[in-house]
Length: 255
Ligand code: GLP
Image (cartoon, protein in one colour):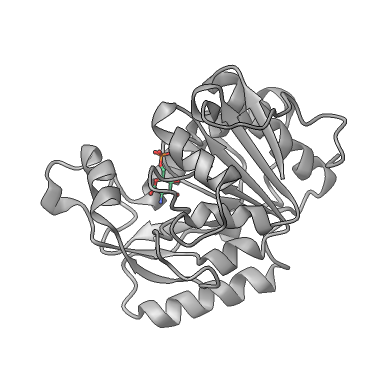
């Protein structure tokens, strides 16, 4: 695991984007796993800038999003599909045929989840999976106590996660109770992981994920078992870490 600590959110986002762009240039038909939430917004912005100013080409990239709320159509402004379209896809030259976001309105959740897993395999597996982290240590919507071998499936959201997300909805009743999410096992099958976190409210979860025991109580701690993981943090989210970490990935083994 390579942990990189940057001064602030902007430099953290730029560092993460640099890793992604490097992988895209090395493999133009990269299969990229995408995450939602406020944390990756900065790195999406930076990738958009690279696309517009430096010609970073997404036309042969395939994407798979981690998760989606059950019951929200893509037109709902809090659906993850809508989030991705607004904050990323509409600004880059991605081929819509290669974009995959779990379907929150599917009539047959189990069949959909099976299809999603198969589709990932058809594309040769995810090369690089972007991850955020929940305040309770969740990754995607794999909440504490989930199976560390799980595959794409429907999950009940915890009260903590629903509360954390309530600010985006007009009332608590509107916050979805379920989500379709890649499993921890699905995420671990990606060839590389890139976890990003910022702000002090993530410091505890980051500490547990990076330096704590590997446990389903903090699903993100599973990244310690992955051979190729980048963790890119700002100063605040890294505040509880005890080991000293690097401030850039360049010229490291991972290149
Ligand atoms: C949601 C998403 C996660 C994300 C988390 C943190 O629960 N399902 O993928 O990592 O929120 O979001 P934020 O980056 O806004 O703190």
